[in-house]
Length: 248
Ligand SMILES: [Fe+2]
Image (cartoon, rainbow, N blue to C red; front, side):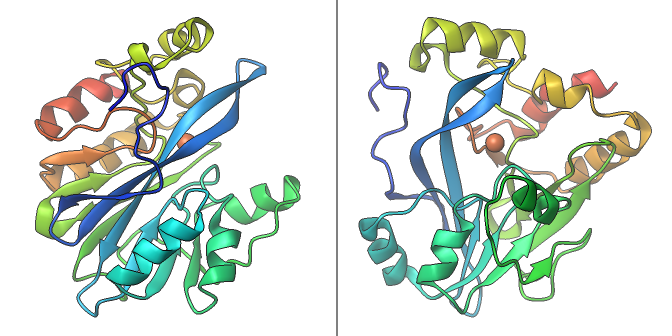
């Protein structure tokens, strides 16, 4: 890893996390932050289900080499948008894997329409694991925000929690001065990454959110995969208690 780079090289490369579970670090995306546009590193997660099919969470901007590597693992069956901000590249994946089911998160259809980004979603994620992956993955809708709900997952066999934006954890050494300042202000700077401040403000129903967090903690995750910044390879429960202390 190049500490001077904002990215997690090598990019678009399958990196094993546990048996049947990989992450792929992707290129920069630009997202709205403090009225401007900030560069974010992105990361997707791939799980192989018992039937050999692949479940792809938060698909990143793909390239031919990534598709080729994915094809060696198995057929892509599921393309998962975990929240209404993580969906942009599902269309590209769906073009390559037209038989895959594109799963919509709460509000993502409306969000995509408002951004004039066309994604042909096939089904909607609920509050319990879908039958297609219930044996391998646990699932819940993390409620309490009036603006954004993320669907969170646990890869049961490896006790790995998979998040998108509920915790962001940017490493200062990988950021320029402006972005470092924004990340510190947003409370998403490693080693104290958490839910971004603007998202925290939208959690009007904290009692409901606390129940969701308790359900996540009951899964007893051992590690946490994040979509942005440094993941938590160990001490997951302590990291979650720290990262969600704003909910107390
Ligand atoms: Fe994100």
